[in-house]
Image (tube, rainbow, N blue to C red; front, side):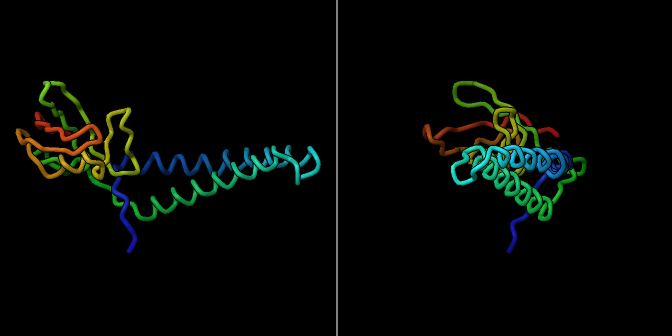
Length: 156
């Protein structure tokens, strides 16, 4: 059974744009690096050639990964989702026992970007928040220990 990739419409568009860029510009650049490295001569002792081939393999692996994500994508219509409970697409404001506030957008794993406030519904905090209402307290086991968060608000 294939795993669905849960995405927002914005997330799907970002993946499609990245795929297009990799297939056009990325492949052209990789082919050029290989061509230049070949011109250096003996391929058996040519580290530039080995590196160029390795880069090309990584590029093709990323293209395959994105194609699989897009093929299995399930797009959430954020406009039709409510703000009663936390779900993918929700913006959630939470606070810990020290009254520190955090704001996150819950996204599918393919869109997760914690540094920019986007956490996956599969990460410990995201998983704990999904399905709860504003005012609820959730307990999360983190690498730093058990933390309790209060859900202050849910928005789109």
